[in-house]
Image 1 (cartoon, rainbow, N blue to C red):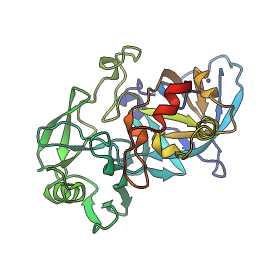
Image 2: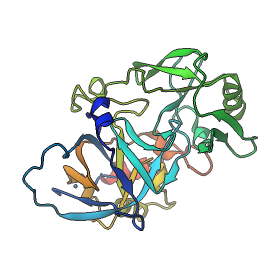
Image 3: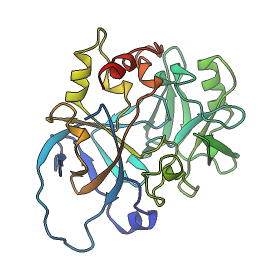
Length: 302
């Protein structure tokens, strides 16, 4: 997912990913792949001309869909989402389209500030809401004022723009984290995305991302998570791995073998397995980083 140009998306009716129980339940089919997570790349659209039907094998069902509006912050569970070149979208919420930065414009994630995972950004009506325990909710406009400054930011060493969300948002996040001054920025559609090819050469030069690490979509299976938890003294959640799509009904680590996926009308191509970092050791419920599990266990047997 990522190579479709914005002009192509403008011409097409963007397909939806649905949870079971909704109209047109989503299912996963393909050539047939499980490490704990798989990064997916290009979407192949099959709307212009019919092609010879390929043999498909149903390998699972989409059990959960997640959007993480602010990089490293709490995810939002959705029942359906638009699949775009830059990641999932549900209404005004886009996956990793908001970013916390320090005073120099460098990205700040839960690797440096584990309590970021306790902050939520939700949308209701005409407002966005920043929320966290023991903090008063902060309402923000859906459209960031055009008079706000545009910052040059850096995500994994690559420059990318972000429009400042204002002083109130900066003060709110700074107050909650209580370590140093931070600001919240928003990626706007007219801004130049980053190119994951500059990070991992297995991505195509045409593919694009906003504030995601490398891929616009991450997949995890329930079976792989259950197998990992069977090896741990303290279980972890899917939220430790921050997937966009959680799949049920497949075998343990089956996702390591899938090269192409079909979800509804959307075709996805696997680009790489996602290496796991210290962020997986942050408890999504407490914001405490252990720096040990599940990484220690993954290193022993994977």
